Length: 438
Ligand code: ADP
Ligand code: ASP
Ligand code: MG
Image 1 (tube, rainbow, N blue to C red):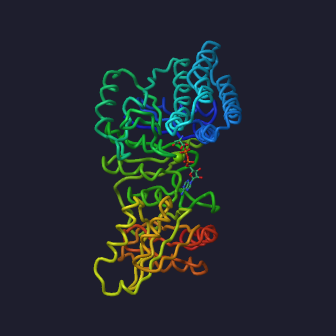
Image 2: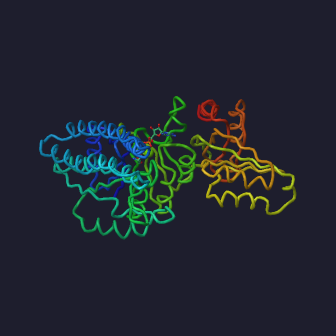
Image 3: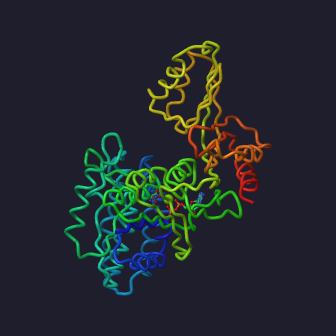
């Protein structure tokens, strides 16, 4: 069976939802994972923020606006008055009335999670009702019945397998299944989610759990491009990526793919395809276990990076210094992305600054600490094995006019990364495209 995940823009209007149904019914069978209609999750978060701040009027006004948007889509999606009525009733009773209920009580963090889960519940119900109206045999599965995270916030694969597979087996004559991306329950049995953009992760986890033939991520662009199309003109789709290359690009900012999405597919050896709903005939990108020697594949950039440098002459010829420094980051559960070292200092980057003040405080016992904010990691991905001579110099030559704070190379065979000021990001991305791909 195929897993097909359709993102926010792909289900962004009634018309797009119809296209999605056309796309998945072209297969003999498929398990379809849907995101919320584009903009919905942002609006739900904004509503929840108004609730949190005690501004119930603004929250209610936004709820009303969102309801109007959905009513218009329902009008367009269905051709029979019965299905329009049934769907409007569902949205009213289970979504919008519920949202307004929150104006009555006190706000809790759990309410935010409940609210933010509603987008995927709406989109999947709307598409499932459309299938029903069209006489298409598609079964709506509630992701909360099989998608769960543990106390460590990691997905519970065993729970997924033991709950999803029997559901599919007991509906063996159903060709199409539709379920929500992003949402899950947690170890307390409460509604939770897999973080923003997490529908890709849902698709990959399900694909791995049921040993799907392929995991297709359908979005609004014809595959992974060789640079960020939001900042560079003339980018081109990359036809093929190794899992590791895709993982590095996703982690370092290629928004088309959620960073966590690669791992389950890679572990299960299931190919991932990135495809375009607006141009379904386009080839897209295939991600699998094959590696293309001698090629630089793409460039990506990750914003909002903070660099932390500690300098200490006490580090000279000392053992255990690195460990002490890293332990401080570990204590505050803050992952480090890039590291460079010299005889007298270490530079590291983090993107989670929740505990920055504590980290800096603790580091000061070992040396002088310098922090730089608003930095950006530029990452070039491809065959960067040392025997592939010459690419490093092409890449560093492209960066010749950009002030560079750190360079990291050799940690993997697929990646060279630069830390630069966020203001220099676009210039660096453009010049890299020019030097590497033109
Ligand atoms: P979806 O809502 O379908 O999950 P996303 O907005 O998360 O879609 O991802 C698709 C977007 O990712 C594209 O519209 C594009 O602007 C952005 N993007 C960033 N970097 C890349 C890249 N290297 N290749 C393709 N798209 C990219
Ligand atoms: N709707 C969620 C979000 O906007 C999940 C997703 O689209 O992948 O983050
Ligand atoms: Mg996405």
